[in-house]
Length: 379
Image (cartoon, rainbow, N blue to C red):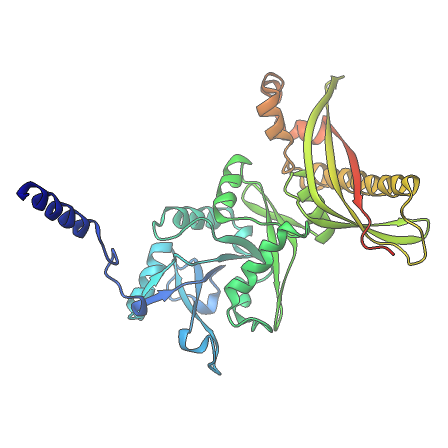
C-alpha cells in the first residue's frame, strides 16, 4: 500500500515539474508585437551619426483600437543606425515594452537597399543571425521607400500586416503573385550567386497592389518584371498553381482558368557546342468565359481553344526566356539547377563559364500541353 502511495506521490511531483508557465516571464501586455518590418537606406536628414546606414520601421497593433476604437489600429516606430542589433537596442531604450517578433508577417525592402550590394549583404546577415526573427515572414521590394507602405490605411481591414500577407497568400489562385519567404530569399540568393526575383508591392492611399517583381543579379537590383511576365516566371520556375490565361479564338475573347500547372525540363540534345533544353508545361483547367449563344461542348472546338492557350504559353515563355538571357543576362529560370542535378557531367564542362554559356549557347524551347476539363455552367 505504501509503495502505491509513494508511486502516486512521485507521479504527481513529476507532473508538477513538467508544468511550466511563460518561459521568458514576460506578460503579454508588456510585449510590443511587431507585425511588419521595413528596411530603407538612411536619408541625409535622418542621419544622427556619419556611420548610420539605414532605417528600420516597425509596425505594431494598438490593441484597444483594433475592434471598436476610432483611432488607428497600428503604429509605426522607426530607428536609424548602422546595424540590426543596434537598431533593435534603440527600441529597448525608447519603449517600456519588449518587442516580440513571433507574429511578424512581412519584411519590406526599399529599392535603394536592393541597389546596394554591400548594404543588402550586411542587412541579410544581421536579420538571418538574430535569434528572435523567424524566416517565414514574406519578403517584398517597394519602389521608393519601404516606409511608404506603413502610411496605407486599408479600406476593408483594420490591421495592415494581415491584409498584405493575405494578398500574397492568394498566389495559390493567381499566378501573377509570387510568394517569397525571407528564408527562401536568403537561400535563393546564395544558390543563384546573388540572383533573385522578389515580389513588388506598390502602396496606395487605402490599398496596396502586389504587382510585378524585382530582378536582382549579383545582389543588385537590375530591373523589373511586369504582371504578365511575373505570371510567366511562375510557369517557368514551376511555382504556378491557379491562374487565368486569356486568348482570342475567332474574334471571341475567352479565358482558360488553370487549377494545376506543372513544369519539367528535359535535355533535347547537345549539338555544335550548344545545349538544347525543352521546358514542358502541362496544365489543366476550365473555360470560364466564351460567348452566350455559342455552342462550346464540341471536341474539335475545345481542341482548337486548347491549342490557342498552348501557343500563348509557348510564346510568352520563350519571350521571357530571351529577356533573362539577353537583357538581364542571368539564369533565374532553373536551367542551371536542372543541369547541375540531372546532367552533372555536362554541367561540369561549362560550370566555370556558365553565365556566358547561358547567354550564348543554351537554347530553350517551350512546349505546352493544355487539357480543358470543364466549360462552366451551361443550360
